[in-house]
Picture 1: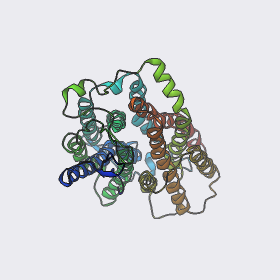
Picture 2: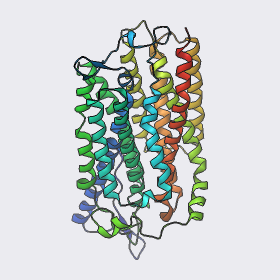
Picture 3: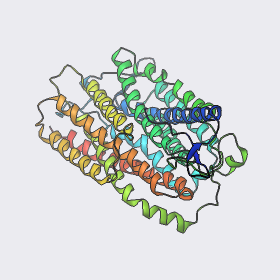
Length: 438
């Protein structure tokens, strides 16, 4: 999370020399507020994406869901081949893990499609509260469900929580210094790594998937605490601005009844203005859609089929390791904005599509001799996806005006969700086709 905090505010005096905006005690207060907001947005990113990641990490287990005697819910952490299609060389579940992906992403897609139409103008606090409640409900439903259907309902709740939270918090960054975008992105990457790693580690340690999911109920509480207790209210824009132009452009949002009733300080954008802003975002939206289409086609369409029989890892364990290594790559690249900034994100889209083609051919021909080569490719895939995400939103924040930034951030966040949804729809028939091969 290094480098997330913004720089102290400064003003120029009448002689043109830079002077501190306030005496030292006030400067220390300003620095404290910067760090509180940096940590707050990092935690919001972590908590917002955590349930979404856990559901994808548990996808193989959710679809291997079986009912034990006595009507007790049970998910076998390492299902035996008898629950799969034994006639296929891929050792398939009856249903593709893309089914979990679709349940985990389609509600998010609906939420993000509504965002440009006015959802982003609703009060922030009720949206955050709804997101936290849905996240907690998702863990409870998946943990105590007796069927795949109920488990998928829990996944839908996780999707609602994640989608509503992403629209809300990305819009909220428009009221803070741009440095918080890096913090948010790093936190979402941390959610991927910690979510996948915690699920892998706890199940490997012998904890059942049910108890593993229940142990994560503290995450929604941390989300609410980070928003309501940690974030500071952004103040009005200072006359002299900041050294790096990272100033708040609007009045405080949190703990302010007037601003909660109307998040933006200006009048709502007209339809013509929204369309103009949207067209200007297309050169960032299209590459991000392609990046996420390719990587989630790999993750939920191919991971289950990249099965190596002659290893010490079971099929379920291989799937969990794939998810964890992918998320490790995402975390590293989403935290790299201070070290590496990429303007031409279409290059990342091209490389990700090449990853997809390479692994798709391997699924068909099985020419890779070792699972460790797949591990490396998957980490590279995660690096590309995380870099595309953080650089896209950073570039948008740099290029949009203050009055358009909130709308632009809420609109652009549909990119990853659209790509993921398309990949899930195509991965389902691919799974069925390949698993019917002898």
